Length: 427
Image (cartoon, rainbow, N blue to C red; front, top):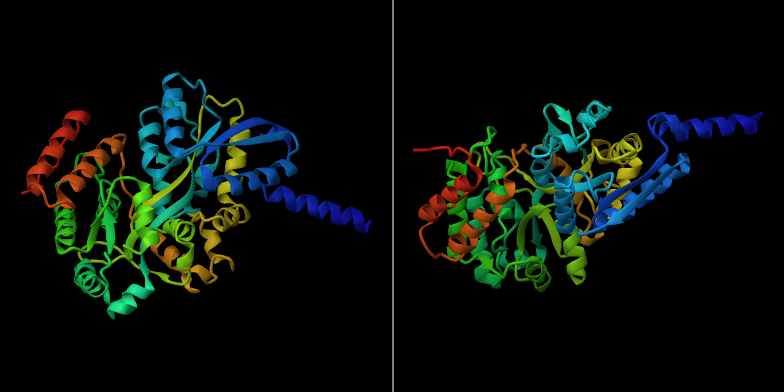
């Protein structure tokens, strides 16, 4: 009797961890395929193993591919009305609109399937990033709340404390001191507009406003561009070649010592500069106090389900389990992802000090930041604005060549011609 009772309890607990549904008739049978890239594979595969153990009639395949390749294949598959597409795929926040708003009939409204009930388990900005027409059309996963990663040794040598950098003017002021005393740059730049997006994102601004109008000449945008230009002229920004490899090289060589970035950079630093263990720390983004907040979205992703899937119920139930279960998201956290499932922030593992960062509780700092991030309207035309702003940065802002406002107007004209969107006018 005791053995039967224990078995019954164990079965009940296992079933409850998957939402209380444990029968093939409830969507736990079939074979599905999910696309994802590198770091996401181990926790996904572990979660799939657990799920299949509880539901033997389900088979879940996780296929690895680079994110650029995934986007190319998704684009081709959508045009071909589903040919070659998997059941679901990982995509980044800023690509969600580019796919779902252009091909809404090709994606499953997972909100109506039940995901809308979980919307409050995620930070507001993250939930909105995967919402279309008031419903969840995706499963939020990792987030990229931005902070500043800094080299302790360079700051100490210059006699600068992170607590002294409260505004972006302070960032410039103390950046010049650090450069003069150590020869190190604060951060680097090329045609990647990540720092620009972080700084305007602190105000809840982006390339476009909430109505989808081009907003590159807003007072906030112009102020940020001018501030970046001033940093470049002051010599605290290292202008480098395009691409990710030069960025990692700057980190590993110690060329740059104060990097505004999404929290995911911790993994890049650890892998790209393992000998710098103990020399890194983080502090909040500087604020100007005129409507901005001490963080912004910089990276992050989630999953979408294609309507061409023959097993939508199974795909939904597995991804719901993976993204809304603390255990599964702790697995994602342990490989380097930053979960946006709020319950993870209460766990012992999440609140522990990080040895590589000299015991600093950087994840707790990131959790504080994630709750103040403002949502951004990326729109279907995010890609085109990203290109134009990148050209502006590499052609004018970071090089000091040409007139900023004139080149900004040219970028806006090109973007308007390409997208047909209205342009916000400011005096």
